[in-house]
Image (cartoon, rainbow, N blue to C red):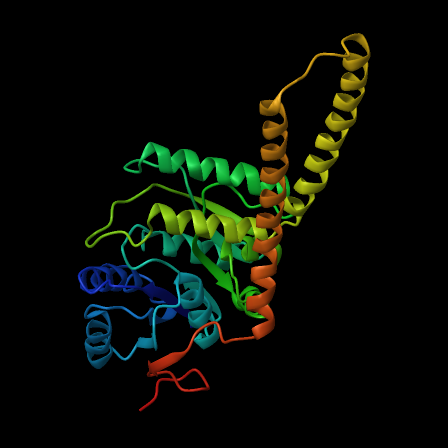
Amino acid sequence: MKSVDLIVPCYNEAEVLPIFYDEVCSVTSKLPDFNFNFIFVDDGSRDATLEVIINLAAKDSRVRYISFSRNFGKEAAMLAGMKYSGGEYVCILDADLQHSPSLVADMLACLETEPQYDVAAARRIDREGEAKFKSLLSKGFYKIINSLSSVDIPESAQDFRVMRRNVVDAVISMPEYNRFSKGIFSWVGFNTKWFAHENRERAAGETKWSLQSLLRYSLDGIIGFSTAPLKIPLYTGAAIGGLGVAYALYLIIYFIARPHSALGLPLAVCGMLMLCGLVLFSLGIIGGYVARIYLEVKNRPIFIVDKTNIAADGDKTR
């Protein structure tokens, strides 16, 4: 039987984990041709998430867990799960059941019967239940990043996917500190078959993604996979410089025609504000890249494991 590792990032999911476990077990029980292991990654939860996972591990030998020393974020949790996995297939899905575990069966069947594909991934076909403003921001983000980046990131692509081992190894080989997995999955390439996935409400608990965190995540994606923003000051500066030359010519002609007229202080103040705004905007763009260089060169670990029942060779510790 081929082994399948299910990676489940968790942050304050104690309320939903028993429901998730029961539903996943119901799905895996119908797939006797695969040997499943569950890798729960506790991302520094502040509730009883780790205790729930440990209790599940005590009664089910397939349950493995990794617990971080603090909250490092979902990107770090997914990377940790992949690094500690050893299965021929690796699946990433959320604990809140917004990713339908039932779709895993179709994804595995695809990779088994269609060898030309290396990844089976979910793509949302609707945003029912999501705020319209958030949906507009999401659509705008994909349009912006795909127009700026050489890597095509499909709109509404999800982290929910099943990958062959070679794909997982390729993703792990990318060591950057500021991770944007949607971009990384696209950058490493490999043939992907997309599965339509309808939006589901959380089975329990509350979402951990605030508008601020989503905007920060989007900015990481744009900066991580495009240098185009660095060219904005160049083009803007050239445009303003051209306007400055044109305006200087206008002033020369104007003062020749009306030597005693004055344009006034407001015009000068307006010009100064425009130039100051351009300079600060340019520094902000450059600063965003410099900050990420600063974090990369420090070479800090992306996550720190506090507790785990997975040995270095991938087997459960005794």
